[in-house]
Structure formats: structure tokens, C-alpha cells
Image 1: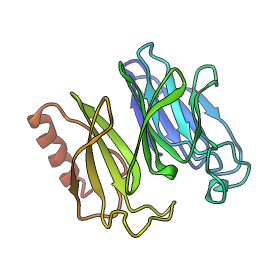
Image 2: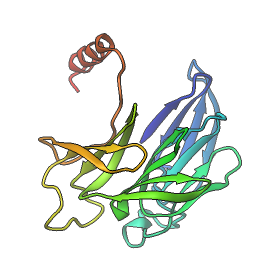
Image 3: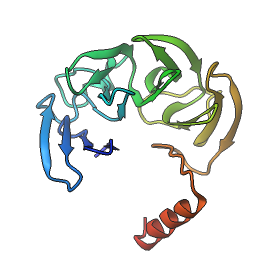
Image 4: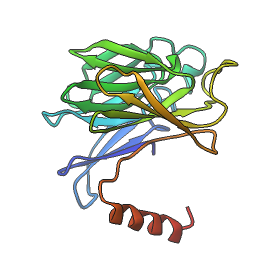
Length: 211
């Protein structure tokens, strides 16, 4: 299970290993199951997003036929696709993650090319190169927060990060504002929690379950 999306009416779950997106109602009764390939983890479906019209989209590394075929050739094969009509919104990506819609456009972590991109009308308009494997996006006011990892999927250079890092970028220009290094190798996602009390409750729940 790579991602979960709650639209308020439906809950969508990504099963990367089986190349599936499963749709549930609010009580987790299964409504539909879309399977895109038979070979385990061939497409590497990963993240979900919903646009202003309520359409659900997913990101994938590519339409590969073999298990983890993206390990050999993922450059430009990735895409963001609609769950409803199976049409591509953005193509030519490399190991994309995170489908974050906003009134200013679509943000995506193009992880394999070490870029953060903002797209509009199906085309990338602005991009920002980073010194790590971007994965995890959160938009708060005018700031886009980006997670950077020391990834196993791409080779990092001598000038790249030595530990996981959170970047703060300007929403409109994607210029860097600041960064924070973390004592870890990877970041899988970033979430913004509005209320401090709710965040404290989440921390207690996680601690109680030993995670």
C-alpha cells in the first residue's frame, strides 16, 4: 500500500505490488478495483491526487511489462493519469511521485530526474532542480515543502545531500527559501496538520502503537 486518498465520499488505496487502485465507500466496502498490469510492481503506481472537479489521478513510473522494469529504463516513461477515463494529464516524467493540485497548477516530484515541477494544461511550466530524490510535497500558504531522500532508485552525486532534508520553496517560482536536515536517509511523504491539538493526538496514537 503506497498511498491512501479520502475525497470525502470515496476512499482510494494504491497497491503498488499488484498495480491496482481500489475504491471503497466510507465504511470500507469495496466499490471497484482497477488493475493495470499483471506483473508485480511493473508500473510502480504510487501516489494519488484529486483536482478541483473531483477527478482522481495517479502517478506511475511507466507501462513496463516486467517486475520492476523501471530499474533499467525509467527516464521519460513516467506519467500522471486519470483514474476515471484513463487519459494522461502529464507525460515524459521520470519516477514521478505526489500529485498535488492547486489553483496555481499541478505540483509533482519528478524524483528520477531530481526535479520539482509545476505543470499547467498538461505541460511543465516551471521546474526546480534539487540535490536529492524528491518525494513528499505539502503546500502551506505560499510555501511548497519538499522532502528529499538519499534514494536507492537513483545515483546521487558528490554534491547531493548526505541525509534526508526538507526544502521550503516559493510556491510561484519554486525558488528555495530554506532547508532542514533530518537524522534519516529517506522521506516518504509530508503532511500539514492545521491544529496543534490534532497533531499531538496523532503523535500519541503513533506512540501507543509502537510505530
